[in-house]
Length: 427
Ligand code: FES
Image (cartoon, rainbow, N blue to C red):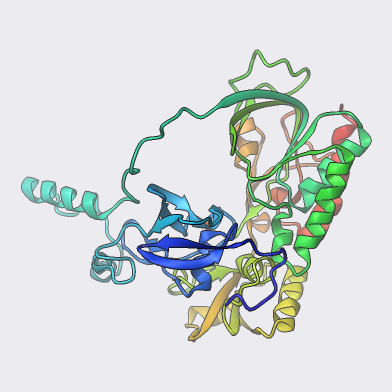
C-alpha cells in the first residue's frame, strides 16, 4: 500500500515485532500506519463487548488504536514512531484479537448488557459473575515492569504559551513574536510535525513546514512531541510570572515534565474527529476523512482502491473538495454516500469508509482555566464564546481556530493572525 509518494522522505527501513511477526516499516512511521499498510485492520477489542477496533482518527484522540507496546499497556499506536525491534501486541482478546472468543458477549447481548444487574438474584452467582467480568473486561494488563526512574520535572516561565501548532496556532504565535520581538513565545504541539489539520490535505505538510519556519524565524520556540496534559489553576501561586493567570500548565515532553507558567495562554487546540451513527460504524476500516487524508498525503499509503465517504453535510466543503481532488489525482476512486443511505447499509467490500462530519472543539484546557464554554451544536460541542479579541471569559486566556467552533484551515489561519495581534496588544 505504500505506493504513493510520502510528504516527507521516509526513514530508514526497520522491523518491528507484532505478536511474534516481523513487520517491515520505516523509522518514524507510526505503528498504526505501519500495521495498516501491511493489511492489519484489527488493532484490538473493545473492553465490554469485544468488538474489533482499528484506527479511526490517526491523530491521537479517539483511543481506538490502543496496543501494548514494549510491555506498556494502552499505548496509542498512531502516536508511536516505529523503531528497530519495537514490540507490540493487541489486548483484550482470547485467544487472539482476530478470532476473539469473548466477542460472544456482543452476540449474546445484541440489545446491550447491564452488567451491574446481571446475576444479582444469587449471591454466589453474582460473585462468580463479577470474577468472570473482571477477567473478560477492562483494557490491557499491568506493565511488564514499573518505571525505573521518576520523570524529570522542571519549571519554566514564558511570556506567551500557544498550544496547538495547526494553522491557527502557527499564525498566532508568529504574529505575537513579530509584534513583540524579544518576548518569550513558546508553541506546543503533541505531533511530531507541525500543521494539525493541514497534515490531512494535499500539500499540507509543505505548507505547514514553511509556516513553522516563518514562526521560528520570528523568534517562536517550537516544542514538538510535547503534550499539554492539564492546567492546574491552584498551582504556581508562587509563580514569578507577572500579570498572568494563576496556575501551571503541565506539559509532557521527551525530556520530562514541564510546569509552565505564562503571562498569556492562547489555545489553538483544534478539534476532534467525530463518527456518524450508522450500523457497525465502529468497525476497523471505518476512519475519519482527515485520517484518510493523513494516510494518503502525509504517509503515502493507498488505503484502498476506493474510498466511500459517508457525510451528513456538516463537514468543511473546502477540505472535502481538496481531499477528493487529491485522491483522484492518486488514482483512488471516491464514492459519496449520505448518512441516510449509510443507515440502510453500505456495500464496502474492498473499500475504506471515511466519515466526514463536523468535528468537536478540543476545549478541555480552557475549561480547566475556568473559561466559560457553551454547548453549541452548530460548533460541534462545547466551545468558548470569544469576541473580536479572541479572549475567553478568563483574562489572559485566548482561544482561536476550531476550538472555538469549526472554522476550517483557511479561516483558522487568518483568525490566528488576528488573535496573535490582539494578544500582543495586551502585553
Ligand atoms: S488515537 Fe490513534 S487512531 Fe485515534
